[in-house]
Image (cartoon, rainbow, N blue to C red; front, side, top):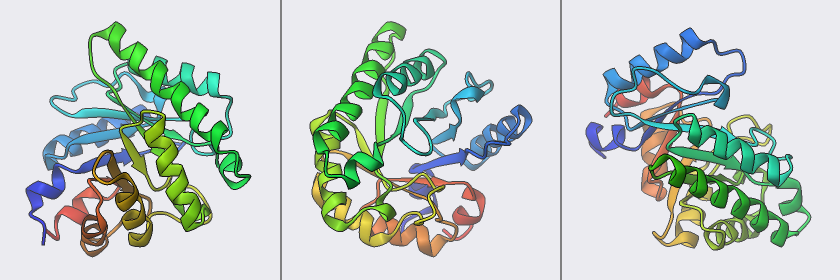
Length: 223
């Protein structure tokens, strides 16, 4: 089994419920620091964050549907970086993917990647883009193509799920398919419905290099 320290170093401690208050987010940050996890992931309206210490700050973009104009996603990503985000988790145009319009999917990702990079350059910091493909809503062939297009567009990670789609969240099968497709050139984030140490370990064994968790304390207690 993976060590507790190694798992903690993979965790984005996440709070994306729309009813979350600033007090809820402050509690999330405090818990993240006490657990020793890598990052927190919050909604963009909660940025900038206070008292984050060494935590990486992640946020979401075009969330949760992905059905947002590319220029709006790009502006949202740039504003998030200006507000202190180190990482932007964007949702692809799922409808375009299902329609087989992969050029549109790739262009959408590239717009966010470029705006994130430009905003990061202005702040003098680096910023990463994780691409949420909503794997439970895609076929295996669509998962593979979405990952290929994310890589072609310059993304840093591919990510399984928002955790909000009715089709479900992460699966070890999807993670393995994604990890095989990107071949270590991109990170792979498993997110959505990972609530036990066993589920987290299964994702790691399948090739996940990052975990999006809301119940991080419960998961870490098992390692």
